[in-house]
Image (cartoon, rainbow, N blue to C red; front, top):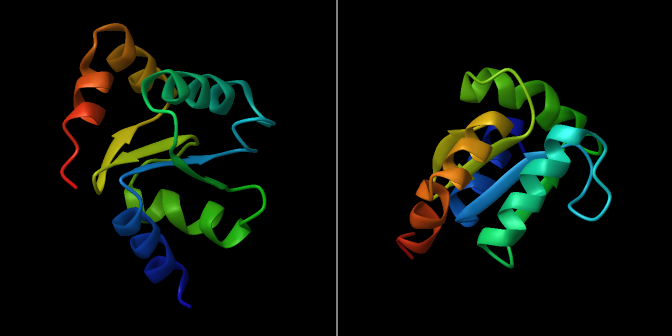
Length: 104
């Protein structure tokens, strides 16, 4: 499967999707760790992709999303942003609100 098609499919199929370095239980960078920790507080189950294990996605996603770094949080098909945006939205309650209002 073409990597862009794979990315689009993952984003479409998973309402809350975190592209991160490592896994939620074994993150490989502090930013990914913090993002996964916050998401776990907002939503018990979310889908993630370890970009260190998926080099094709790690290379293609920044170009596709026009966002250069990881983690990348996608909710309901929309790019939310990286760690600093996730933290800010969590602190002001917007992240929880966004997750609670996901269209299924």
